[in-house]
Image (tube, rainbow, N blue to C red):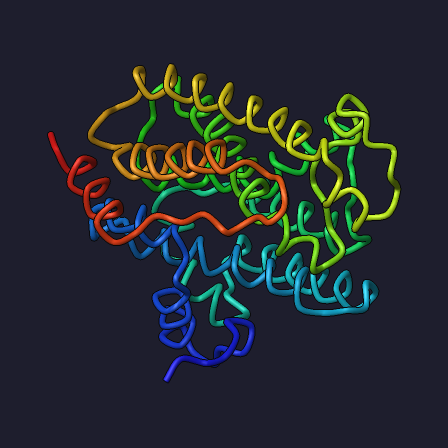
Length: 285
């Protein structure tokens, strides 16, 4: 039986079981990674899941920040050659083999600290972009190293695809995030839509909320376009997982655009056959 939370894992095997039983859409992308490199992706996801759980699951901001500080120490020790948590034991071989950068892991924690310090509501575009860089594009930078793509376009792919995926997640998870007191739709987009309401409930049911969300969708689509340009310059064989996640999330974004963000809203997802089709397409030479 998997442990309830990856934070409670006692062994690397338990941490890996948590990853495999998470139900995350990112598992689909991991299946497109060659088996030899897949273990490193599991370790990367386990780390992201652990720090994300801290930012989401502890009500008191002081506790959240303190626990994230502990994970900063885990990262420092890991890059000094010592794994001090089962998640870090799972991650350690990939760090050594693929030259992963400590700065990317610290950036992920910085992004989680943004969530942990206060409930983000209506951030400025610049703040949202910084958040996306830390919680998503930093993961992309680590991922392309694991994929083994050393092309000059790989950093651009991580930059733009990370943002495209995170913005799509934000648009999909609006009501789930609101349940935690968060709203990542930028204040500028809300203002442009004429939404003057300050309270979260008022914003979510405002008749112009759909207009504000579509501004974020346009930004996501722009990053998908720039990610596509980078993909054309990357090693096609190495970035199959990135192409798979790109296709998966762009399809999610399209369905969100069709449904819109007026109430009532429903969580958009892709079914089994959609996933299977995307996987088969990604595996094509």
